[in-house]
Image (cartoon, rainbow, N blue to C red; front, side, top):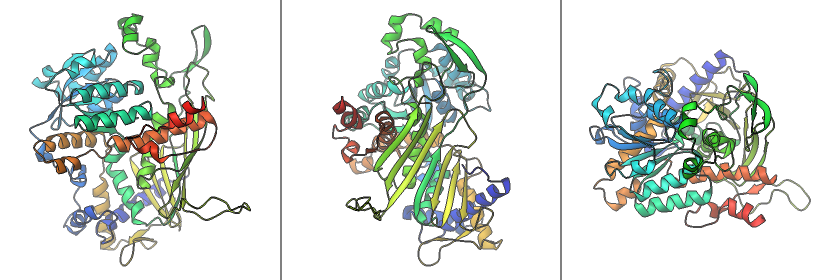
Length: 541
């Protein structure tokens, strides 16, 4: 994110972040009053104790331990493997899996090694009698017919989210569906309505809602220590151009690349098992290549904005208190690859968000063309496929300081005095502010220890916590009254996730139309049929 940060400056930024988090823990002006008393207990204790996500987010392990939720996994590919590797068997007991690709079914059990992000189910259940309980289904509908399954985890390609979620809800299953929520906003709205109708929980896998690092980064932003936020720069850049080779497919010869994760080779076992075109079409696919490379096509995927940009936009909107954006302008295209893909390989988007004092009555300029003052926050996002020089993350720029969140694993904080200057927060009287007078005084060391313990040394991406929390909600809804049940909902439920989908999919439309697009309030109302696709595409064709 910051190209020239030295290791020493990163260490300074980490220390600054930890001290400010620790100082906020003991501040009367804590940005989240419901957390204040809990956090003050940490800073007042004899030792800085690690803060668990369960304690921070208010779900207790005891209410579920010994009664794990019986779950089925639909979709055993890359994301299904990550989710199973992060699940907590004390909360979620996976008893069934479903996939039409035999290689995925094999990998979901065997995994890719203990140190990988896809350990496999054998890692959790291989030496346990519960391994024998895990049933394998080709058709996910057979999994849904099992009345003992309470919850399903859906990690299918994007174009299948809607149908699988709707089928699961119709069977009264609680659902965790991977992001992006759906292929269109109309589908998102129908999924929300069905969840409400069936009184089932619908959680969408934007895992930053359960990341302790982002939780504390958000505390820093909301405390005001950064000052007046005017710009957030977000990016996710990758270099997928290694090991080029010439291939001939469909009568065309072009260059393919060995590390392009979106254009994978089709395994021989999958090609053999799915050689019948009628069988493939019954599952919704035109070819086995389309199934394996679904992210490349508009009918099956949502491109870079859906797969990567939605993460950054979700984080940005968290920092901006989940306010709806005002507009987006986008440029993107197929600028590098000469293969069959239909989606962009480079995208660049600029969003306007309302600040806390935004006045919708004020126009950008008067009749003479002079700029008029209004409270606008500009967010830029870029995703490129040919250069991974910068780490992915978000840079929040304020009038009194800057915060960088890098790779979901580290946060750095700096004041206006420079990247090598230690800062702390002053919290006495008024709102907290950065102070360039950090020292080794006991209070400052204590604050740093509390902040470091709160964030944790082994930073979680949030996958484990989102599944734990859903299991907690399922168990605690049992016997709860209507009012309590209404408050037992995921941190990223259908409505929150639809807002993220609106940003990502409207960005795609802005790039397609090559113009600035303004967001409409009606798009965010699940009870209304207004959608960006209908308003911007269907009515213009």
